[in-house]
Length: 414
Image 1 (tube, rainbow, N blue to C red):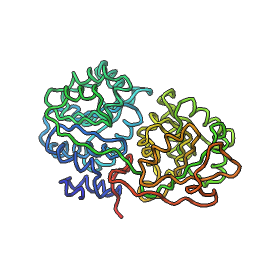
Image 2 (cartoon, one colour):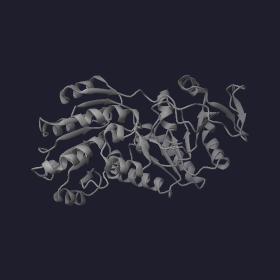
Image 3 (tube, rainbow, N blue to C red):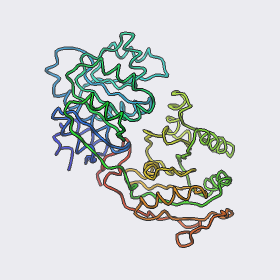
Image 4 (spheres, one colour):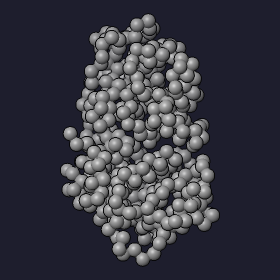
């Protein structure tokens, strides 16, 4: 299956090829035809399955093909995202896929001055990507009208509700035309999500992509048993013994992320924490520093890390194991993209053995247990699976069909 097989127009196919994208991912293969035909779509897909392109490509194609029939000015497509970081990434994707189409888009979000945003809005745009709060602010000030919207996308709807945006979303939806095409994307379907979808969608096509259950092929996985109190010392040892270009470190709590960051800075490693207590400006500055390599290490909680998309990430380190096994797969899937190799290192304290057991059940093969010289945990280490630190771990699994991640979530040309 190629994008040509999905009847994607040549300019978009060429833009995709310039990015190295040849074959659609499962969510793209399933959703794009229905959206091109004009159906509402209820998509269930995890972050990292390529769902941004699944709705961006049809929107761009339909707007481009209808350009000659346009009779009125105004915003024709609205994409609503829960966070500034995700909104920016969606905007970047629209930029990548729309080369040569002469369609105008912009992104608006809070935490920054609205003046540059309103300047662009006054000039007129076709596609608006927005976070709920800033969109409502500018609507109330008269800078944004939604009565010309033909396509509406609600992305990461479950996260929207988790963040308390339900009232804002309902106010925004009330300003949309009754006749429009809607794409509704969520990772989970609790009752409130189902109710929102039922109220918004018109005879939708259900598109489901199974949760990712295996990481990318070239991730070298290993786990160290360690006392909880010794984790920071072991982290330092890992940085001294591994060739780490960039690392994304996961902690369970915001406090833990800050603590690990301080310890890394003490030993001369450029690091910054990203979590919900950080301002949007601080989060965006941290992400940009991480992308341009002025910051070597990003320490994050799982919620704050959703949407982080960084190319050529050499290491993912689980300072603390997640309680949900699938979260482990999402974490380490941020490395070893596009045929690159990557390393995933996990620390396991006594109280985390249950989490490790559940993770191993999810994977085709158990994670390789390794020993760090100088660290002797008080829990029994399985001898059969363990190796000394001087050996390099081998990839210990094969990819799943839906193991794409983030903005680069396309099958690339081999």
